[in-house]
Length: 189
Image 1 (spheres, rainbow, N blue to C red):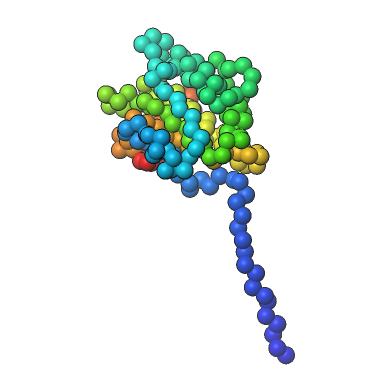
Image 2 (tube, rainbow, N blue to C red):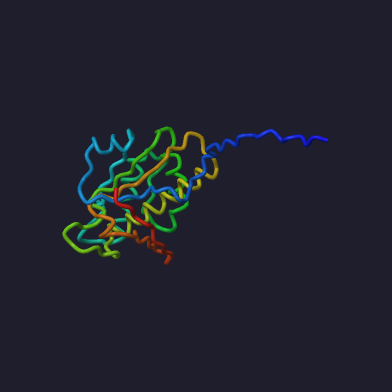
């Protein structure tokens, strides 16, 4: 008896909306990006944050965390009252607010200007950079949660740290005020 052949079925893999951990999403550039460079990267939606606005001669990390929280609330168009700082205690709530800020935009590029103090060697304990690390950590976590929950109209999100190269800052240190920490790999754009 002739053996019946099983018809070949082409498998089509569709994007399920879940983030691929191998995708590069965190970049650094030494010089400020131009709108032309951003456009060539394919982004039409950009949020600019300037970490120098979060730095202060007085107040250190607490002032930086509070200043950044206000900027982020405004720039991402978050609903509700601004939180009092980028702290571990506010992290979960801010991540939920970020998810809403990622929706309805198409692909989104978040540019953090002056991520480091350019005239000095990288100091991972510098308050502005500490808050940059926390923000980037929250962006990644919020995007992953939104993706896993298949949040409708969730934008693809990439982050660029301006003012440093990956050679100067190959890993972005993330240190929270509750003692948790980790490091994120930075790629040169």
